[in-house]
Image (spheres, rainbow, N blue to C red):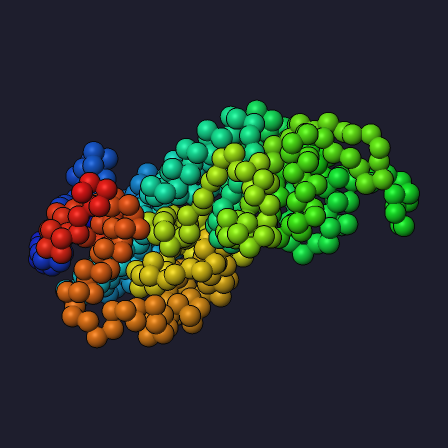
Length: 452
């Protein structure tokens, strides 16, 4: 609960201010002197202080300076007579949140307290999110507190210690390259090279030259010897992205490399031994490609020593607030902005959006919003039209013209399924207490199928 101190030697003003703020739901303590207030402030700091500049024992400016020097998060609202407005304005320049002129109206007291409290809550939320980012981003480059991501982190940490081939199956924008780099960085060969190659959109000759290298004179234009990426990655890791796009004839050559752990430069005659880890990534269903005859089954099993399937962002929605905060910080730094968070309405839109582009799309949305916003918090108006229009466009069509209870049941069921029936995470997304969520689960018979 937000705690407020009212420091005023005027009995009538002090009692009226305290009563108004107590009725607004705040915990209020009153003081008649600066000395008694400062003693209590040192023992147990207050969140908000309504401070009269004219006290019998201490100058209000001195008290303000002391508070801002020792308790920077405390917000101070100056309360003063009409004859001292200039002093009150000066106090705001010295760090006061705002000022009120006596006699104060109850509406103004509540409004000022609510605004200061919102600023404090936002600051605390940001501190909490920063701590979560620091604690949970145990894998280089990753942010996530969801059960799905914690399982991925555990797998990455285990795989990194074993020099085996890995197959990453994931949609675009979920972090395939981050995952590969994390495996490399956590392994014993982290000081060796990490090499990336995209297999899509290249002819076989170019892929051969890039991966295997070539000898001087191997073909027209080969005026010098070239070391291929596989050879250049000696002792390290090679990420072959979009492996499903690799031509069949090239798949045969890659299979030979995996079997023999050797390469032959184009135009060369001397095999070169390899000591590398291959990580292959794809956003396509390789088993379906095998059935269609466009991907070799033997290559699939050579690559698929360990498979890591990265979750889509809509499957780890509880990570969205963490990611939003992280991307706001990045965008602030890039654009020299000072955006401090996101409004509840904007967060609701982001939490309900499907994110076909996954984390990459979320980052682009936040970058766009931070770059263009003129406020300190992102609002729905800062988000792309497709997000603001989503309730009317579709995405919720299955719930159109349904009873409200059925809509609630379906949405709670969706959140529970997405969070793996993590009650704490589901309650946070739904903004329901644990008790209320349990009661609704019982009402709608939403039992965890894993415990059935």
